Length: 556
Ligand code: ARG
Image 1 (cartoon, rainbow, N blue to C red):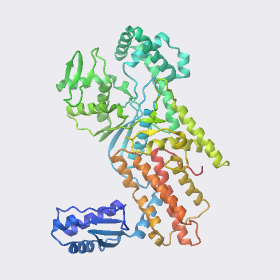
Image 2: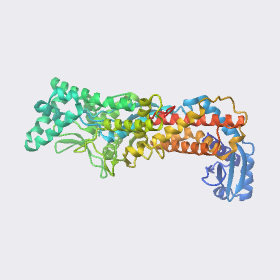
Image 3: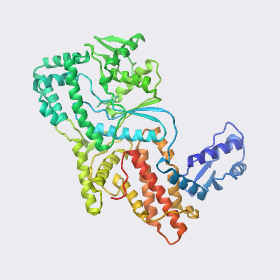
Image 4: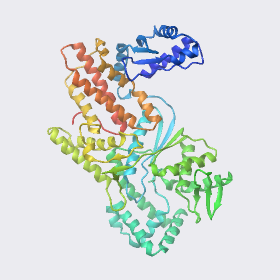
């Protein structure tokens, strides 16, 4: 809404000055009292007018603009005050009528978001957790803006490792153990395969031969593979249930098994596929190493499957944009993917939405090697700790388990999404569960605080909006008014942290407001203004939490 006012001012000044070459800028100054400002220096030169002439001309143009209460020339800027009463009324009414739909948009485009994508028979890593949470938030944000979103879990369910798994299973596997603890047991088999193959290299040959049989559709091999996939997926699903995350498609790498020959053929037709020491590659110039499409034994690779997936998604979903939410370590892979599709003549809007590592005590947190942290257990631990905190704070609360789950999971999610995704994050349960500071519980608690003030109050009507001339009132109104713009900014950089930052600012400003103003006052008009304002704040805060994948609460 502020953006709409800015756009409107810009257009009317440009039209009013009647010169198609000029560019009018409308800023939101960080300092001073003005809500908006137009810098005039540049325009003076371009238009060949004096500063005095120009400033009076521009203020005359804005004279009748209903959103503006006053303009004032100062140090080369035309400062603009927004009509606070008018804007506040418009914003509060809009939030309270549209409720959770406030901020929605109608951008009618299709975006495929590829996120989570754990690997079958391997543990769900902390990187997969980051991908899941970032991808899920992006899915919610894009959906709110009117995009058609297809959330895809491109499961790592194909590749030479399945040859190894099958060999190991046939030699040492135990079905009972696997069914009790699928991923742990399958992973053990995989580790054992690598240990044994050091002294017995022929195991590697067996594995390659078996993977070839799998790719050729051998029934027995397919059944074993399906079994590993089903068991692993069961375990992944319990993680998704806990987090409240879902997908529109679970088409993983295996789905493209019968679609890869067509890709290789197409590359060949285009003269892009060349032989290199028995393998088939696509050369990508001096800057990027070649993409390996087929190995010497004919087996296809990760990038071949991604190429097939990309073409399938294009033909099937007709996307305008594809996002891959995958860690920084796959930077080269996605550069190659982009480069190959360009050579194939496609101009797809592809973005690798990359992210940094998760650290614990400053060191890379890992689910590999000796340091096996089961993420499911870590999240359960967060819920447990939240339960303790809540029981201390509010022993008589109903729904304790539900609240603890929302707070514990919310804390983990917010810790991940509060900073630019490229920065590393520190995984520290005590810190993320604190009720003060930049945490999930702080946001949830701000919402709960509003709920408890509103309890037993009756909202009628705001008879007088004059109080919205007060700075903190208007500060909150401006924040509410910029919600839609904030969502768009988040999609521009594919960064949920834009929403996180916004919610922190909204909560902090509300808490400041709460500290300075008595909300339930004698003056009925002011009281009604206060109640409506905080209800609008809560509405937007709760919707923002939902977008991040968190649950808003009525008490905690
Ligand atoms: N399964 C891969 C991994 O765990 C991530 C897949 C990401 N998506 C993709 N289309 N390549 O590293």
